[in-house]
Length: 229
Image 1 (cartoon, one colour):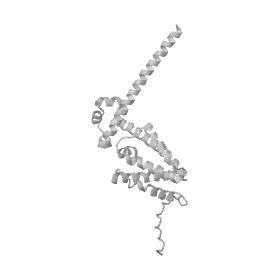
Image 2 (tube, rainbow, N blue to C red):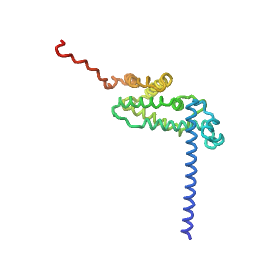
Image 3 (tube, helix red, strand yellow):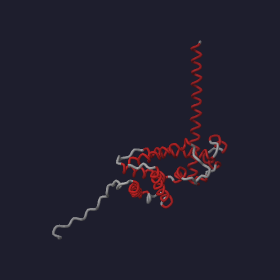
Image 4 (cartoon, rainbow, N blue to C red):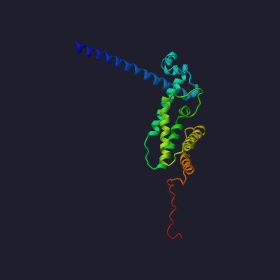
């Protein structure tokens, strides 16, 4: 009888766990759908244009339903920030083709810039304070901190360890991104300046000459025909 009671208790616990898991999965799915609709909306209207009424309409739900999953507009922004920060961290964690410190630094800076310029609204949310009163939660902010840590590690590999030089590196890259987004959206006019900027940065930060990067191949002169001399 005692064994039967134990089996019944275990079965009840399993049913409860399955039910809880299903509810949690459904809740995550609903939140993800709302966040996805929010990205679509701000992509058209800008970050400040996020309206819960329009968001509910876009997601095919009612405004009270939005509040059932997010208690405020800032909570939606926080979920968006966390998602963008995880994407940023994942991008920065990708391996590089080279292990040479200077080439890795240039590739990291280019990857940083391309990620930002590819989605200006996401870039604004992550790196610019365009939303008065919004501060991301520690949980949402953590992946962004980890991603910047990747850049710090790359700088250390290039013998650059001062915190102010990390600030300078991020300022250089985001400055190029700002120009790219503002003046050549969808292009690469300022992204192409990454290599030159890295050379300038290393020349400024390192005590000796900056590591040389491979020189472009020079065009060969045309052959002189025989008897032409």
